[in-house]
Image (cartoon, rainbow, N blue to C red):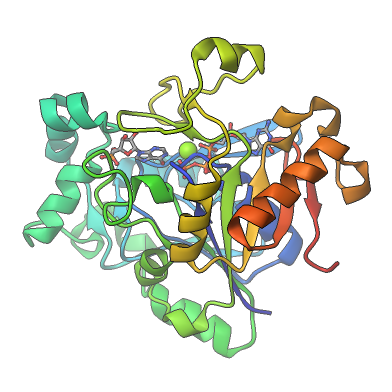
Length: 335
Ligand code: GTP
Ligand code: IMP
Ligand code: MG
């Protein structure tokens, strides 16, 4: 068993939730740990006819034996966390690092009324930017200071590294995407932290030498929500022609749709140290491929697209998602 990490290669919402849920179900890790900014992210997981939207707990919850951890780098909104634990029936399985930063009501208010954050950047209004600012100013509270989080408190790096020392599998889940990284994205139209693999490793407290695989998720048709440049964006009419319409998991805003961007994908794969690519939404390219689980079932058009992605990034495409549901995937890892 080993450590696998999943991160977003474009502007977020690449379908990481779906990929993580598949890997958790298929690879049966002992621990799934979430990194990233906080509840600004919304992962969608579809299992049969049930749809889950997760903002705080790891998407790997579908692996029923897995311990579910939230790393110290992540900002916690205690209400959102508790509500998810309750509604998804996760009591006893979730651990929150005692050092996680806390989002206060005042951070949310600030995020929603601040004309720069909300207006110019198009923030999610979830309080993450102001909470990370408070963290940098060292005025933020930590999870250990919050009464209602006491039952979840743990040492995430210790749990992960102990599991690895016992030879168990660990799955690490990134949120957001490369294009909205504070360091490498389209600044200032970015989120309040780096979003690349190195940051996600730091978020959960694992050293770079212990990460075996980094799967970078790319969408066949990238999307962007909020403000900021999007070089390959298509017109709404073109998106409608292709039958693509998406809305944000957290904010319900309409996502802008674009064409494949090979240059961005290559740069993103490089900085993330990608060992493999997970390509989502190939059913958008050719609806006849919806639900395929074998490479042979894919059409010539989709196979050629996979070859283009590999050519552009110089990284093998190992997972090909053919629909939102967990089992709609071609897994080439063993082949
Ligand atoms: P963030 O952490 O917020 O960046 O989100 P995410 O990467 O987990 O993605 P999100 O769930 O917000 O958006 C992806 C959308 O695409 C969801 O509606 C998924 O159900 C859907 N999706 C995922 N994989 C596929 C796929 O292969 N085909 C199609 N058609 N939809 C997919
Ligand atoms: P914030 O992270 O809420 O401050 O938002 C800053 C920018 O990042 C905005 O353009 C948001 O739309 C975008 N953003 C933040 N989190 C996500 C995400 O999980 N998916 C997609 N976009 C995001
Ligand atoms: Mg999302």
